[in-house]
Amino acid sequence: MQKYIGKIVQLIYIDSKREVSIRNIRVIATGEEKFMAYCYSKKDVRTFNHSGIVSIDELNPKLLGVIDQINQHSRSNQFDGGNASGN
Image (cartoon, rainbow, N blue to C red; front, side):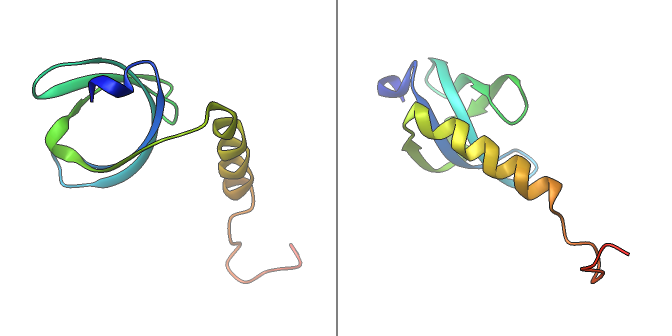
């Protein structure tokens, strides 16, 4: 994890409640069992367990803005229950 300090990565992560999430984070510091990172979806610094990482990939910082735009667009265009016309 040391090699990711200061970098933006995407995690597939399982938390202590066994809930799976995909997070875009910037790694701040790392220890033997845990690491701290700024989580872009929570807009806050979070602590993660190394054991919860399912997958980790380094992201190009330029892509983070594109990913945020896609996520915002997806949230604003939620399925309306079959009323495609909006009436």
